Amino acid sequence: MSSTSTVVNTVSLVGRVSADPEDRELPSGDHIVTFRLVVPRDRAARRRSRQVVDVIECVAWSSRLRTTAARLRADDTVEVSGALRRRFSRASGAASSWVSVELTACRRTSGTRG
Image (tube, rainbow, N blue to C red; front, side, top):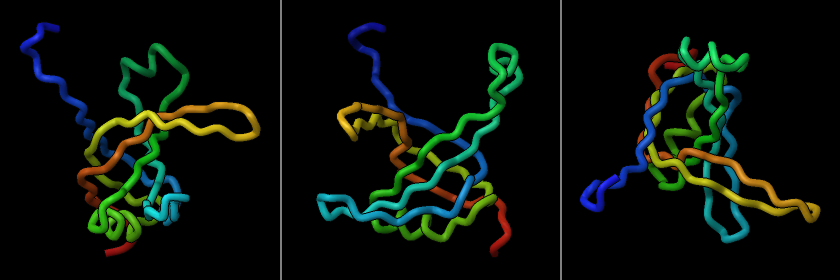
């Protein structure tokens, strides 16, 4: 990558909501809504691995996106976009990390509710 290249952290996914979203209050007092998105892998990826789906945590921080995400239900198909974020936590002396999508847009494309 040259020094004149633009750095971009943008993700766009379409998948199925695995369970009803969770509304949480963080120790900081901030509220977030999280849900897991099940995204099928393409044919080329399935040839390299037995894993046929990826499960991605999605996090809504803004009031508008929290409202939208909280209305989702298990098995809804949604289109999301946002930025990848690596999260860290420490519990019982063990450190862990995971990647989530910090949402900038979320739209249900099909589901059981109108």
